[in-house]
Amino acid sequence: MKKIFYLFCLTLVILAGCKKSDFESNFEKSPEERMADAIALVNNTLTSAPNGWIATLPTSAGGGYGFYMNFNVNQKVTMYSDISDAGASTGAESTYRVTTGSGAMLAFDTYNFISMLQDPKSSVLGGVQGSGFSSDVEFTYVRSTADSLIMVGRQFRQPLLLVKATAAQKAAFLAGEYKTAIDKFKSFFSTIKYPYIEIVSGSATLKAGIAVNVTNNMTAGKRVSFTGVLEDNKTVLGGNSKFAFTLAGADLLGNGLVYNGIKFVRFAWKDGTTLAVYDSTGKEYIVKSSPTPLTPLYLLIGAGYTLVTVPNATTYAGWGADYVTRRATAASAMLNGGYALRLEQMAYTFNNTTKKLTLKVNMPQNSTLYVGTINYTYTRTDDGVFKFTYVDADGNGAIIVPFMAALLGQRLNVDTFTVDYLTDPVTGGLFAQFKSVQNPTFTFSGVLQ
Image (cartoon, rainbow, N blue to C red):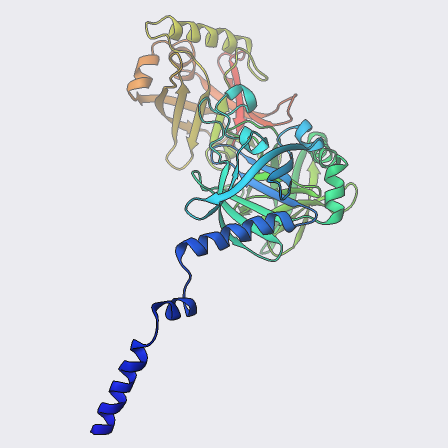
């Protein structure tokens, strides 16, 4: 018993002789020290890549974008971007800093291509007035590997992925080859009529049509979609993804494009003229051309394509004379109807399961944007003729229904419509064009999504 008591006292003496700092130095650093280490890690990683970084960033409200960035120790970064032809061919210098936020944070603190994506002026790139593309200029460090940095936008939580460039890639960007690669990709899809890939599913070979929108349009630009029909010729499949151009083709961002259970991650050139899509396992799917659309559009409306966005314009590709006149009448009625509302973008959302159509109308009053919602149900015959039935509207929508009678009450609510594909002659983007059976010059078109 005396031995046990002696050992206990000896232990107390040893513990009492230890300083608090002895324990801290062996276990965990202070939060300030850990933050300083993280800042140093990000700073050193960014500036120690001798050939710079290739980066991709999806935006919250718009599409995806690609960049080349070269950071130096003087807190300056030279940047190229697929945001524009000039940005892809000519580098621009700005400043950056690595600081503290919710963690180590990379902040672009002078105007550059990243800043353009959040520019509040819609005239800069076509984003929403006041919020741009809902993108960030501050990115929190998440993790790193031997050749990459993963960061996330501070507000909109979109991933900024940076991968170390090779010497050959750096030379290509500096020589303006990024624009050359982008032009080649755009030319391929503007030349090929109806692109598709073949996917083996059981004993069947399915054809998935490909639509690529290369513009900066917020609702549809910088996106790729796959659509097709299963072997029963009734079930429609669809998938879409934001993308960023690369020197080799294009990367499908985020979780990639999932279609028929397959995750597609990138486009790349198999050779000088053959473009392929690759899935997450590395399997190759050659992009082929069909002389005619693979699937009638009426089968895809509400399934493969759920949104048709009719732009804010006085006339547009695919708009017939009667539609143009009636839209002008509706716009005038809204503007002069006591509320000074402007008729702008109209978005038609189709649900082929519930057979519901939701029409959302952008209706700004001075500098404030209001949206009116007008609800319909619809039917579709076996040969693709649509009939729309008005149901109701929300408070804003109810205000403009009388003003829009020339478009709605006298046409959309009473006529029947066919729908077909239309290619934008300027951008090459894929549109849907609706045509009144009873009034053939009442046709309107919008971007498919």
